Amino acid sequence: DGGITQSPKYLFRKEGQNVTLSCEQNLNHDAMYWYRQDPGQGLRLIYYSQIVNDFQKGDIAEGYSVSREKKESFPLTVTSAQKNPTAFYLCASSILGTSTDTQYFGPGTRLTVL
Amino acid sequence: ILNVEQSPQSLHVQEGDSTNFTCSFPSSNFYALHWYRWETAKSPEALFVMTLNGDEKKKGRISATLNTKEGYSYLYIKGSQPEDSATYLCAFMEYGNKLVFGAGTILRVKS
Image: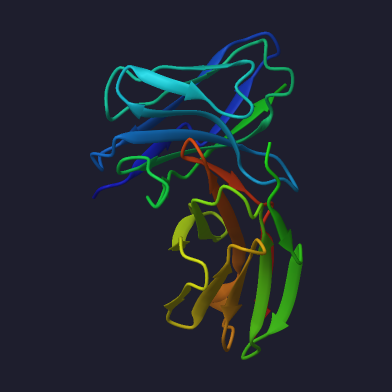
């Protein structure tokens, strides 16, 4: 089955620790995205990538880092510099990343900082 | 950062009722408007991608209209069913191929 997988589903982290969220897709999509959801707010874009080895900051990139070494994978690292990391994180992909491309979403990871 | 507003924030209707909600977005530099449905414990799924002023799209009992000049889109659900219960998200595509999402409208359909 083609799709997007995110792991883990739930993640707990102590303050001051970095943590990496996994996102893998087998849809052969060029573009991948990371969003964050907080209660009462829309999905906010953290980073996106339209091609391997290239990525751009979204609206809330501070305290996060990404890599795109393979087409299928776009891991997100939440660093200790992120002041309020507790949130629900969604990964998505689209064919080319153009304005009319539908985005396909993974099931999400809920990160809680203890 | 652009602002995309959705109203109402939540809606409770009876099975069989028809309903509609609104997405407001900037009317300048329009590229596309996306609608997604997000059911509890599932991933958001695309409903429509709309690009032309006056465009109307339909998928079963759900339809959407687009007015790019005044900056709004309506989503209509005819004869709501319990399985329509979800959060409906709209997203405005701005230059740079970045989607800006609204906070969503939560729909609950009671049987």
